Length: 148
Image 1 (cartoon, rainbow, N blue to C red):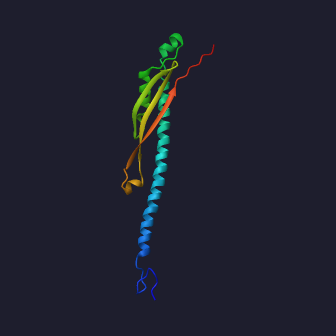
Image 2: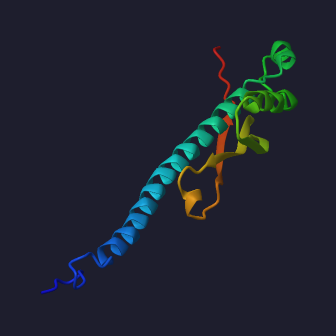
Image 3: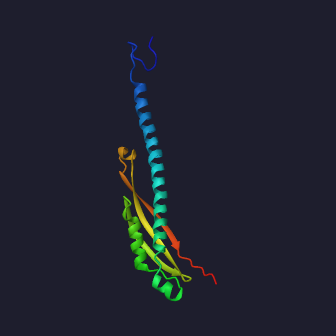
Protein backbone atom coordinates (compact mmCIF):
# COMPACT_ATOMS: atom_id res chain seq x y z
CA UNK A 1 0.00 0.00 0.00
CA UNK A 2 1.36 3.35 -0.93
CA UNK A 3 1.11 6.51 1.20
CA UNK A 4 0.51 10.01 -0.23
CA UNK A 5 3.82 11.67 -1.14
CA UNK A 6 5.56 8.33 -1.63
CA UNK A 7 5.91 6.27 -4.75
CA UNK A 8 5.25 2.55 -5.06
CA UNK A 9 8.72 1.54 -3.80
CA UNK A 10 8.32 3.63 -0.60
CA UNK A 11 10.74 6.41 -1.58
CA UNK A 12 10.06 10.11 -1.20
CA UNK A 13 8.48 11.57 -4.35
CA UNK A 14 9.90 15.07 -3.67
CA UNK A 15 6.68 16.93 -2.89
CA UNK A 16 7.81 17.97 0.59
CA UNK A 17 11.22 19.08 -0.69
CA UNK A 18 9.66 21.45 -3.21
CA UNK A 19 7.46 22.97 -0.50
CA UNK A 20 10.45 23.43 1.83
CA UNK A 21 12.49 25.08 -0.92
CA UNK A 22 9.73 27.61 -1.62
CA UNK A 23 9.09 28.20 2.09
CA UNK A 24 12.81 28.65 2.77
CA UNK A 25 13.04 31.26 0.01
CA UNK A 26 10.10 33.14 1.56
CA UNK A 27 11.57 32.97 5.05
CA UNK A 28 14.96 34.20 3.85
CA UNK A 29 13.26 37.08 2.03
CA UNK A 30 11.42 38.07 5.22
CA UNK A 31 14.62 37.91 7.23
CA UNK A 32 16.34 40.08 4.60
CA UNK A 33 13.49 42.60 4.69
CA UNK A 34 13.61 42.78 8.47
CA UNK A 35 17.40 43.06 8.67
CA UNK A 36 17.85 45.58 5.86
CA UNK A 37 14.73 47.51 6.89
CA UNK A 38 16.12 47.94 10.40
CA UNK A 39 19.50 48.91 8.96
CA UNK A 40 17.90 51.51 6.73
CA UNK A 41 16.00 52.96 9.70
CA UNK A 42 19.25 53.18 11.70
CA UNK A 43 20.87 54.93 8.74
CA UNK A 44 17.93 57.36 8.54
CA UNK A 45 18.38 58.21 12.21
CA UNK A 46 22.13 58.62 11.70
CA UNK A 47 21.54 60.90 8.69
CA UNK A 48 19.23 63.13 10.74
CA UNK A 49 21.75 63.20 13.59
CA UNK A 50 24.59 64.11 11.23
CA UNK A 51 22.50 66.88 9.70
CA UNK A 52 21.65 68.24 13.16
CA UNK A 53 25.28 68.21 14.30
CA UNK A 54 26.43 69.84 11.05
CA UNK A 55 23.79 72.55 11.47
CA UNK A 56 24.96 73.14 15.05
CA UNK A 57 28.58 73.34 13.88
CA UNK A 58 27.59 75.90 11.27
CA UNK A 59 25.54 77.85 13.82
CA UNK A 60 28.65 78.49 15.89
CA UNK A 61 30.24 80.56 13.12
CA UNK A 62 29.41 83.93 14.64
CA UNK A 63 31.00 87.06 13.19
CA UNK A 64 33.31 87.90 16.10
CA UNK A 65 34.18 91.36 14.75
CA UNK A 66 30.52 92.39 14.80
CA UNK A 67 30.02 90.81 18.23
CA UNK A 68 32.96 92.73 19.73
CA UNK A 69 32.01 95.96 17.98
CA UNK A 70 28.40 96.39 19.05
CA UNK A 71 27.41 93.16 20.82
CA UNK A 72 25.12 91.96 18.03
CA UNK A 73 25.24 88.33 17.01
CA UNK A 74 25.51 87.94 13.24
CA UNK A 75 26.17 84.66 11.49
CA UNK A 76 29.19 84.61 9.18
CA UNK A 77 27.59 82.64 6.33
CA UNK A 78 30.83 81.69 4.59
CA UNK A 79 32.36 80.46 7.84
CA UNK A 80 29.14 78.56 8.61
CA UNK A 81 29.26 76.73 5.26
CA UNK A 82 32.94 75.94 5.81
CA UNK A 83 32.22 74.61 9.31
CA UNK A 84 29.45 72.37 7.94
CA UNK A 85 31.74 71.07 5.18
CA UNK A 86 34.53 70.42 7.69
CA UNK A 87 32.18 68.56 10.04
CA UNK A 88 30.91 66.25 7.29
CA UNK A 89 34.30 65.85 5.62
CA UNK A 90 35.37 62.71 7.50
CA UNK A 91 32.04 60.86 7.29
CA UNK A 92 31.92 57.99 4.80
CA UNK A 93 29.03 57.79 2.37
CA UNK A 94 27.56 61.25 3.05
CA UNK A 95 26.71 63.77 0.34
CA UNK A 96 25.76 67.32 1.27
CA UNK A 97 22.81 68.36 -0.91
CA UNK A 98 21.99 71.83 0.35
CA UNK A 99 22.72 74.37 3.07
CA UNK A 100 20.02 77.00 3.41
CA UNK A 101 20.64 80.04 5.61
CA UNK A 102 17.75 82.39 6.31
CA UNK A 103 17.12 85.11 8.86
CA UNK A 104 13.78 84.88 10.63
CA UNK A 105 12.80 87.44 13.29
CA UNK A 106 16.43 88.56 13.46
CA UNK A 107 17.68 85.03 14.19
CA UNK A 108 19.65 83.10 11.54
CA UNK A 109 18.34 79.61 10.68
CA UNK A 110 20.56 76.99 9.11
CA UNK A 111 18.97 74.04 7.36
CA UNK A 112 21.28 71.20 6.35
CA UNK A 113 20.04 68.67 3.81
CA UNK A 114 22.24 65.63 3.16
CA UNK A 115 22.12 62.07 1.85
CA UNK A 116 23.73 59.06 3.49
CA UNK A 117 24.22 55.79 1.62
CA UNK A 118 23.04 52.50 3.13
CA UNK A 119 24.60 49.28 1.80
CA UNK A 120 22.08 46.46 1.85
CA UNK A 121 23.32 43.19 3.29
CA UNK A 122 20.66 40.68 2.19
CA UNK A 123 18.18 42.24 -0.21
CA UNK A 124 20.74 42.73 -2.95
CA UNK A 125 20.79 38.92 -3.19
CA UNK A 126 17.10 39.07 -4.18
CA UNK A 127 17.57 41.49 -7.11
CA UNK A 128 17.15 44.68 -5.07
CA UNK A 129 19.63 47.55 -5.47
CA UNK A 130 22.79 47.11 -3.40
CA UNK A 131 22.71 50.64 -1.99
CA UNK A 132 19.93 53.01 -0.95
CA UNK A 133 20.19 56.80 -0.57
CA UNK A 134 18.81 57.87 2.81
CA UNK A 135 18.03 61.58 3.30
CA UNK A 136 18.63 63.58 6.46
CA UNK A 137 17.52 67.11 7.23
CA UNK A 138 17.88 69.33 10.29
CA UNK A 139 17.53 72.99 11.18
CA UNK A 140 19.41 74.98 13.79
CA UNK A 141 18.35 78.45 14.87
CA UNK A 142 20.90 80.83 16.36
CA UNK A 143 19.25 82.42 19.41
CA UNK A 144 20.86 85.20 21.39
CA UNK A 145 20.20 86.42 24.88
CA UNK A 146 21.41 89.45 26.72
CA UNK A 147 21.99 89.84 30.43
CA UNK A 148 21.29 93.47 31.22
